[in-house]
Length: 218
Image (cartoon, rainbow, N blue to C red; front, side, top):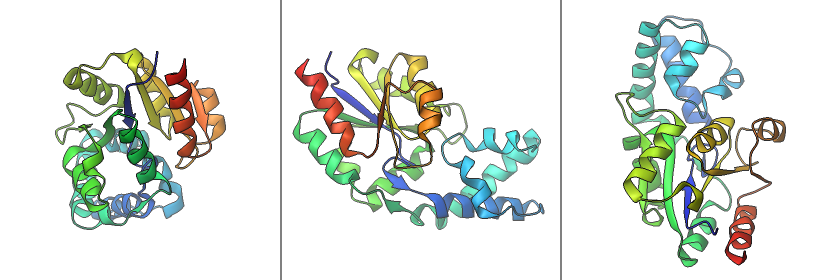
């Protein structure tokens, strides 16, 4: 079956948010009076829901909620613009629209931040639907976001391809019955992609076009 609907992760797939996200996390540590970790040790915050990563690092639920609030305080004003477009992102989106594909966002980043980032980079017009996390945490995991996209677009799981850069994209996609193309442009590794069973592993965004074209030819 050809992929008619392409879902994209945002952080690490279309944009490189390393400075903005890690600065926001450092701001949260500082605001709670905790020792601030070295920036390079905070890469694991890129991808999963923030609350989950703070609790994984030993924060209590109350501390994690406050850390998320502080992070958003910084990120909403400054951090979301400490970002850059990953090479080939706009060209890929443009080509998918030329091919007649439905393009959707599927990110664990809150919707209001996601929309502002897409608008900032001039990408919002390529998207037919914005699937993102809710600020209240009721929709946060990648599987929940993908289900939200499918429910609102009517797309069948077998008609979709999830494009992402971390294990969370693979796990979430497979939980919903969607195939996943993991791209080596963000923060995941080939070993991670192989371990979690990515259906396709791409060296760059351009390779995802080849996968989609091959499916169209089947």
